[in-house]
Image (cartoon, rainbow, N blue to C red; front, side, top):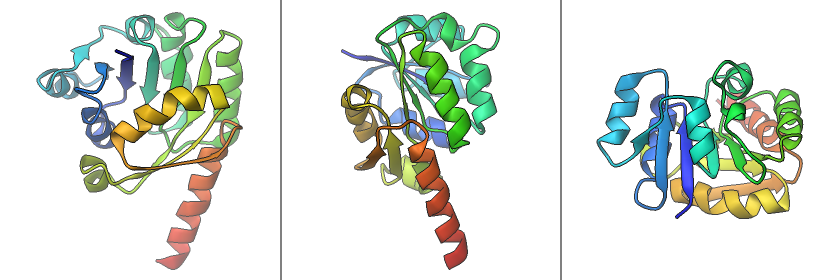
Length: 182
């Protein structure tokens, strides 16, 4: 069974990660121990650090507030990158900055690690009910691994290209159109 690590258990991340329990061997990590405990009670395992999670898991999913938080989680002290090894995959569900996300993907590629950006649109109630929309981009090989993981979280997953960061760029367009409509 594929081992999935999920980092970032805020309202959106905790809602999305719950859908992985049962389909995957799920390990979680967050600064908030209460959020971790809630998922452990549902069947997830807890990681003591990002490094440990990345060492154990085949795929690492992040859902954090900003791209700078993703960079820190990956490359900061006790970061995920210290546990990543060639052949692993990082999926970034953060609604981030496309250019900075592409730069993170380049740094991960130097480690032999692939990346897919897969921001989420739809809000917390939609995430709880598997109704969010995921807009993703990444290489064909990375997509082959990422797609079933994303489909476990929602039925509405769209791939918009092979260049990491394009999913976040399209999400920004989507948000701009929504703001104009409102």
